[in-house]
Amino acid sequence: MAYKHLFFDLDHTLWDFEKNSAECLADIYEIFDFKSLNISTLESFQQEFSVVNRHHWSLLEQNLITHEDLRRRRFQETLENLGVKDLEKSFGLEINEYFLELLPKKAHLIEGAIDVLEYLLPKYELHIISNGWQDIQVNKMKSSEIHHYFGEIITNELAGTRKPDRRIFDYAIEVTKADLVESLMIGDNYEADILGAINAKMDTVFYNPDNIPTSQKPTFDIKKLVELKEIL
Image (cartoon, rainbow, N blue to C red; front, side, top):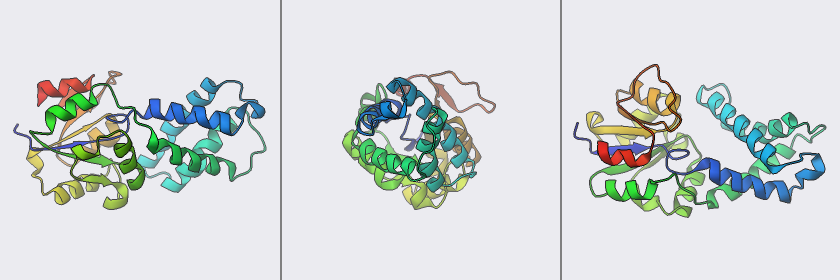
């Protein structure tokens, strides 16, 4: 297939959310003095937040909660799960706002991201399809110096819907003036990126470093980003 337009997810696919998030959480642990809340180790805070955050993003992608619910709940529930009691309802939101201020300034990328983008840029039109917030995603890309590789940066704020809803993929095709059969979606989230794109009749690359089993086979399945150079 002669592809012309490549649509990338951002978090966990190109931008290393886990590493960047861990750095932010380390800052938060100190600034908000979590030891005084009897959260004994930074690692326990980081691990619990990772679990809670992924759970809430999954609920969001199923339209079971809103973005505002996610912002309000994820730190509040993380702390409650770690045994912190009698929290002010605004405390989790306060931490979340600080987290969102710090996070876009971090610059760690998934291994091989720059090498692959340099290889692809002369050959394809590159775009982003993300469920993140527009300003935050743009700032992440600028901080990590990958913004210039991409044409359109498409988020749920612009499309009015989020992955896996096929309408965000339809919107991406319309905005980029791409031909569906010449388009390829690349992402790490099987439900949001892969099943969503399959439902929109778009070919897919599942970035799957953990070898997650799939019910519907993507067009391609890779464990490292560098494998894109063999496919494309």
